[in-house]
Structures are given as C-alpha cells and as structure tokens.
Length: 341
Image (cartoon, rainbow, N blue to C red; front, side, top):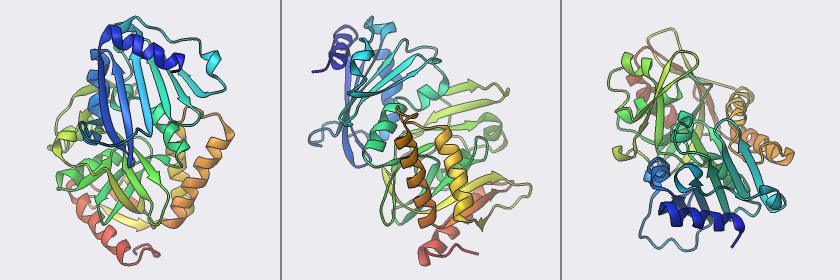
C-alpha cells in the first residue's frame, strides 16, 4: 500500500468513511471518501452512477479523498511520488491530486471541505477522473449531451452560450441526458458519450425568465460578473442515461429571434469551438504534458470529422428547442454522412 493511500486510511479512521461503487464509462470505479462533511457533497454528484451491492468485479480505478479540516490528516511529501504519479495542485482551492501513471488509483487531498469554489461542489474530483479517462483512451469534452439510445448530440459553446438551457429544456420535454458540463467520449463508430456528473448549472436570470426550466436550486454561486448561477442535482429526476451513442455535434448560441433553428456547420469550425471550451477546462492532472494535450487535440479533431456538425441558434422560447433537436437527430440518423440542410 502506498504512503498516499495509507494517509487516506488514517483519515478514514479519524473521520469515518463512505465507500461507493460506481460504473463510470462502463468501468467499475471505487469511490472512497473520508469525513462525513466531505462525503455529503462528493457522493451526490455521482448518485446516478451508483451500483452499491452489485458485483462489479475488481475496480478499474480506485479514488481516495479526504480533507485535513475534518480529519486532521495532511498529505505526505509528494516529491517522493513524482515518478509514479501525475501530480496537480490548485492553489486557489488548495486541492492536490495525485494519479498513478498506470491509472489504477488516485488520491485527492483537500485542505478544507468548506468555502470551496462552487464548481468544486458541482464537479468534484474532476482532475483525477479526467486523468484516468485520458489514460483509458477517453476524451473529456466540455459539453452537454442529450438524446437517447438511438443517438445523441453533444452541445458545446462558451459560458453563457446556452448549453445548460438546452439540456434542461430537453429534460423538461421528457428527454434524456448524459450530463450538462462534461462527458467522457469513447472512440468508436459511433463514439460513445459517457455520463460523469449528476449536477447541472444555470444562470438564475435564465431560470427566472423561463419558469419551470430549473427544477430547483441546491446551491447558488455569485459570479464576478454580478450574475448568479444555480447548481442542482437532477439525479432524482431519472433523466440520466449512463451512456449514449454520439451522432452529432452542436455549437449553441443565443439568437435574436423567437425561433430556434439548427444550420450546418463545418467540422473545422466545430473543432475550434469544441477545443476552445474543452482545453480551457482541461481536467487532466498532467495538463502541461505535451503528449496529453496532443492526444486531446487529435481525439477532438477526429470526433468533429466523423460526425455531422451544426450551429444551434436558441430562440426566445427554449421549450421549443427539443422539437428542433429531435428533427435534427432524426435527420442525421437517416444520413449520418451529410449534415441536414
């Protein structure tokens, strides 16, 4: 047992332990959290992927996390582990991530469980998961994924472009999703989009404008821009599918008119948009490693070349978005080589 995992067990002995079995990207994952307060916000984000009590076999990936605030256990000297682990430290949140280079396990250490940035509550342990995904040949993209078992669209775009509005409007219309912000993409024909987090986020001014779009708010983040963003865990809505075949890429933006529409988009334009968002929010602990970045570029370029791409213009009534996307997905399923006109 490594000294890092030994430190986790010391923290669990002091603060208690929650052990959860997940099926993430079709692979069994063991999530181990020391400290009740930390478990209370880490575990719910993966509620839709839990398989407690099921015989999933040996874990492909074991995650260990604890905080010093509630357990009093610090992290060992990481210099001893530079050759065996990918290491990352976030100075702002004081979160340290160490992922074994073989992708078998990871340790995530927090100085405190309270007062963290809102995105740490919405997407916990994301650097450890992102690094493991890359080591397994998966690409983590910054996009909402909506559809069903017959086909899905990945909706990307910069912050405020309408990804979350689109996903929530799709859910409100009875649709299924694999996530709002991040998805793990497995190469193939077609590629498979795997769900990661059960949390969804939306600017509250959008929620106020379109009553019924946001099913409730668990937490509120005050952004530097003055806008507020709400986070809600929608696992209880039974709207998640753990995996969906990906048949299209969409770049969202809020239009000036009342009508939502989708127009064809070149793979190059889609690739630039997808890379801009995904690389800016890279989840890999070895984000500065050239090989990791190159692999990310290659996988996203191939994704855009292999799928129909479209520009989604969101009109004044977001509840009509679902009809437009259903028509698009039906059209690309008939002829996946040609974007609908």
